[in-house]
Length: 290
Image (cartoon, rainbow, N blue to C red; front, side, top):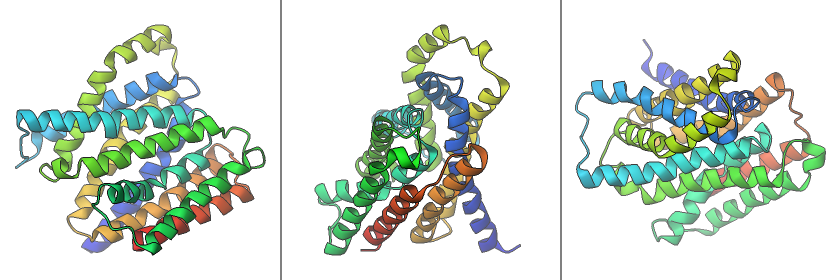
């Protein structure tokens, strides 16, 4: 068996799972309120991570202080990230969501630079400026691009990206002490417990029995494939493939998401979306390689 070919096939599958998350979210949001969907997704992902954590061999078990750090990071990188993502997705398009999430590496560079962890070269600064200009292009022509994209929705998606960037920068020291299985288990379980009162309250207002099978399958997809399986693939690939090559696959996510949004949800992909997307991707690529 050609091991590199298998790894790259898995990475493509990972990108497909992440891209499908936007489509599944849109379908689920037709019947789930945004906050209920976020709670259900995170809770289900936490339950799915438990057996993976239990059967993992050689997993470093977190100390009491380490567990607290992991839970706090999980609240930032998973709970707030996913709540903002779902709220934003309910108010904007797949195209806008995927392209703005694509800014995450730039946000990580900015935060790392502010903390003195990363040197901001003129090339990196130029890339950041270019990526942010792409967002301006994307947002300036909403009426022509798509009728469902709103400033508020884009803002919440940006907050989701910022939460994950904060998680990446401030959690680096803690997350390097534990495997991805440990980090994700604490993150999703902690997030599910934290959101449980809100989830129960929302379920009382919107009975789960009234939600269709299609919406439930979409919510389960969001919990299983992009939240659990895709991240396990991601961290597995990092142990066998250079990080730069793994990161390069992330550039395919907006392309896949736009194509799926057009094919399945019949979202329009107009000139402002294409222009803004190209500028954003070019800026992120320049900043990362600067």
